[in-house]
Length: 155
Ligand SMILES: [Zn+2]
Image 1 (cartoon, rainbow, N blue to C red):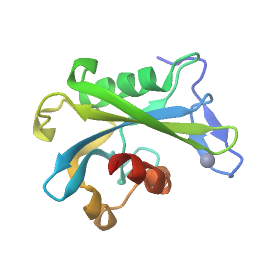
Image 2 (tube, protein in one colour; image 1 turned 120 degrees about the horizontal axis):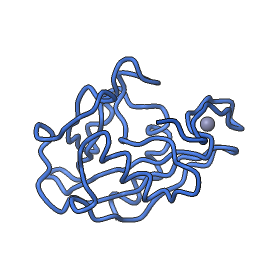
Image 3 (cartoon, rainbow, N blue to C red; image 1 turned 90 degrees about the horizontal axis):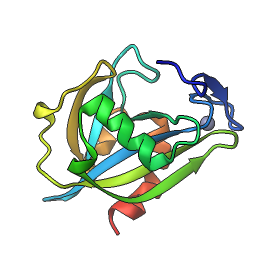
């Protein structure tokens, strides 16, 4: 289904982004033995920035809140429902003419990556410790947001 907000946009920083009214993603995090652990999506090789790890998410629909969009995307991509998650604070990465809102969430049940129903946009999903992110290729947008997200994750 194509909605009127589908399409590429060039932001003030000169990137090309998908989603004309911005995008949102869900950063699910839990307390691990060595600090926060993040539920990240390994993006399918055919997708934009394929092969990198980042938050599940996508383009917002017209008039849609970031929270609603992030939950809709994570349901489509990972099969998680709003009942599985408690939403937390969000962080906006505003590029000028385009923005990405990361909504934090904590799991309300045990989420095992092997039990998730992934759609074609993911090659996999894993819990990755915050301290181990340096050892995997990260989506450039997620990587650029990390310093801001870090404060929320360790709060
Ligand atoms: Zn941009």
